[in-house]
Each structure stands twice: as structure tokens, then as C-alpha cells.
Length: 251
Image 1 (cartoon, helix red, strand yellow):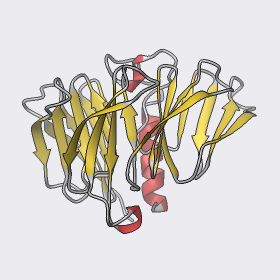
Image 2 (cartoon, one colour):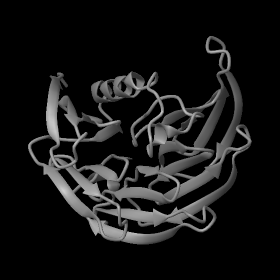
Image 3 (cartoon, one colour):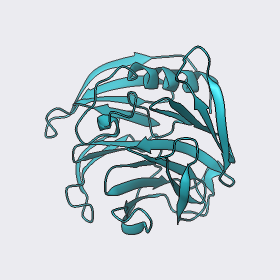
């Protein structure tokens, strides 16, 4: 990941650290601080910071912010890429699947349920009943894999079941709010779907004139991170999504 892009992305995540809880979004749980993107490698739940590297989940107690204390490491596997928290669960994206950990005991994640897929780049977000996973083929992400979007039923958290798959051009990060799903498609722009019926996605908007990598939706406002700019959109009216601002930055 380009260093400047990473810093811009990190700033975007930090912009939401003081945000209030929102309905049907990852920030709705009072256990979570703010909102991060789907391609994050760290998340905060209550007094704990969870971060991932290529193989391991690292847990730190940050109840005293000026004196974080290492609490535990959990070996997961290889190719770990992203981490997303919702309620008492961590959803971890890897190159070969999604792992789900119960953090009711915050320093001893349990279960490690997996949903396997073909080898590819793989961010994931989730809510009470669904997990959304993008797979990107090509380049370092396995050029023999078809890029697409999985929707997985996690009503039974111990037995995730695929219920929908859709081909996509080149998906990167994704996010949701209420019944809208936002999927970044790199140079192909940003796709917005209504997932009221998760087995029959309806595309409500496809913004084609931007290059996108990750999104942070919250309460009608959408931050879109690209390799060349940070965009802000309003989706308060899903039938009329419009751009509010653009911040260009140098690579």
C-alpha cells in the first residue's frame, strides 16, 4: 500500500473516532469507538485495540491511553488482510476466507469460525445477519480468480452460508448503512446497491468518474478514499446521491 495513501486512509478513519452511534451501521454498538473503513488493519472495542498482521491477531489493553499494555496474540493463519468489528465479534478477512471470532472475553477470542473462498484480496464488513465480502482477482490478488461480491448469511454465526454472489469489475473496500451497500471498484468507480432483499441486489447508483479504494458511510455522509483524492458524498436521499467536496492530494 502506498505510504501517502495509507496515511490519508488512516486520517479518514480517525475523523470518525468521535462519531456518535448510528442505526444499522458498524458504529451502532456502544462498544465501538467511531467508524473505520473495511480495509483497516486495526479496530477498537471497549478498552481493547485489535490489530492484525499477515498471520496474527494482536490485542492491547488501552484503558489507560497513555500506557497501552499488550494482552494477547492469537495465531490465525496466513494472508490475513483486514479486520472489522461488530457487536462482540471480529470479522477478519484473509486471502482465502473470512474468520469470525467471538470477543465476549476480550483477551481470549473464541470459535474462529471460517468461511472459505478462492484465493484473492478480501475485505469484509458485517451486521447482525449478513457479512459482505469482496474478492479481487488480478495482480497480487491471484489473476485466475473472478472478481466479485459475496453475501453470507451469518444468522447462525457458527455456520456461515453463502446466499448471493455477483461479478464485479475490480472490487476493493466496501461499507453499508441502513439498506445501502457501497462497493469501491477502483478505476471503475463506486457502486451503490439496495440490499433490502440480500438475494436480489438492486443497483441504485454507479459513480464512474472517480477512482476508489475504501468507503466510510455514516448517517447520510460518505467518505470515499481514492489513490489521488478524498471525496465526500451525501446519500441522505438514496434517489439523489451527490458529491459534496473533493480533497486532492499528491502521491
